[in-house]
Length: 374
Image 1 (tube, rainbow, N blue to C red):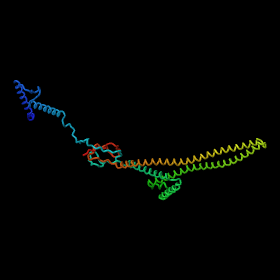
Image 2: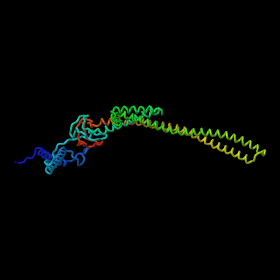
Image 3: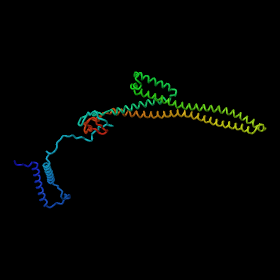
Image 4: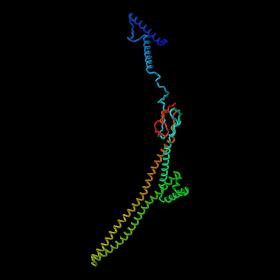
């Protein structure tokens, strides 16, 4: 069967021949004298319609020829044809967890369609729950310590007997609750607040007993110093009376010695006895002054012990109050973290590029999915 040229190619060929004829006519016309005009066309610029159409047809034919050549060199049968999807990077929503955790359930995978707010994975809340329990236990401990410190500030040493009776009463109630099995076993049935309150009562009692022991030691030292002071006072009084007698005796012996009734040796012995008594008196007075200073020092030590205890308790109470305020914020954050154990889709769309494939893997706070919005 003879091959025929396509009709559109024949049309282009006819346009080329007509363009050539037009060119010949223009060449014949150029032999005529040129009439002077005001606006002559630029040299080398095509102004005829046939020239423009001819150039365009040649360009189209060249492109068509190159396309045919590319088709023979690279046949379309060698191309890989597969289905795919286009994901716009400008409308993606990252799905990620703030802190990460262990995945216990995956509810959506790549290609799944999810609605806004739908749960696509669940994380193990054990770590967040343990942290919340630890913070609540710490808060209960701090509250019990705060109560003990506030009570101790207004407590007296004499309150230890009533406090000891309260502890014995609580221990007896705990023991009877356990059927006489012992306080340690019975305390297992107590709540956390009851255990903390009981232990703080014991700590308060121990603090009062320790403070009383320190004050009692100082009181004993003060009693000894007072006894010594009283003894020195009596010794000084007796010695002053003896000195008065020795002084009268020496004065009498001095008159007798002046009258040559006794020897000078007897006078000197009496005066020596008087000087010795006065020397002992000076020593006793000095010891009495030392005992007085010791009494003042012991009294100051007692006041210092009470003041130091009160100051330490005030500092500790201030720290407890500050830590309680801080731990409240930590508990609120832990409660929020416990409620955020599920990963939810921020918008409705299709999940793509999932990095969570199996359960049990730990996910950091990095993108886990991309959820393009619909």
